[in-house]
Image 1 (cartoon, rainbow over the protein chains, first blue to last red):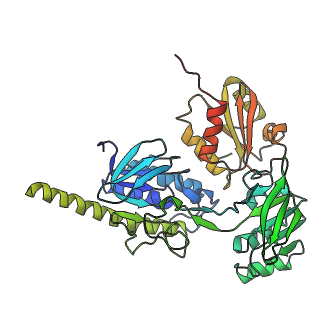
Image 2 (tube, each protein chain N blue to C red):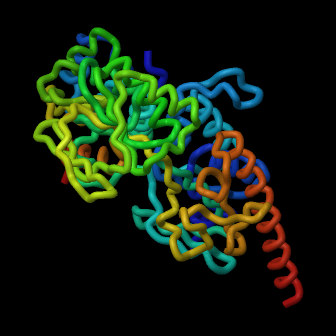
Length: 320
Length: 118
């Protein structure tokens, strides 16, 4: 361990939770590093307008993220963006993190804020036709499908609401959903059912995307009978929820069956000195404000932990 | 105008000038939406590292962006942003929809190999 690569705390994830922890820790004069896999701001930057962040009337997620980043940097927080974690050791008093470029960093405490991402179907052809017929954003790409026939995958609020909004462009929208009922709120289901342009294929799932230069059809499997039909379509919009970005933590700390990190009221995980906050932890409401709240707790608890560790070492060096 | 920290292209003439004057150019043509913003952010982060590449953006709904929207290479594209890579004024690669940092790095490293002085 070299002095330069040793930090009091390392934060893994650069969304609102990670940046909040960075602001609190560096303001408490603790040497802090944020490692961010993607763009700083996480899913928050994808939000066009945030109107429920107290103290700010209206702001884009992108701008709010830039302010948080500036705040963290002002207090001396070191930020490494677009860098992924290759391996790590969270046990013991000195935690070690190796980045994909081979550089190694150590810290007394770790705060995990990896967030979540949109779930993909993971079916053959999905990556190939992304942007060539497959989309995950109705407001972004809806107008490319004007006068065309499309499929929407999913049964939650986003799927049904976006299906209705896509009827502004498409002549026909077919909702493909894996269950015989929808998880969405009743009003969203009723609105979709009342729309003449919307059809439903229930208890079914897309198993293959087919095309040449662009998407031309999909294979839809009836999950009850196993029967597969070839379904011609110009586009597929996928809205099937979010998954936590916690694959890299599997087997290291306690998570629930949905791979959400289990924490206590101090945001402490099952490993001493390792805290977690934001969308990746077990919780019901995932908002920028709740991420910021969790991360404040995690940062304060972590600073307390680091302080105790340093005091203990000081006592040990004095008594020896 | 796009509120990023990238160099903004406002006209087709700006676009032509940029690709004429720089050997390696990456242009992201999009809106301020969830598929585009991550790409601008990655470009902002990579600007320091890829000094031999000129990074810029152009608003998709700007009529002048026809130079990108109507490029033959974007036929079949149905997802924004349209991201274009030019070498010596010629289009060498184009992608549709959001890309990951790794995907962008792969293209930059392949298409814009820096000249090493021995």
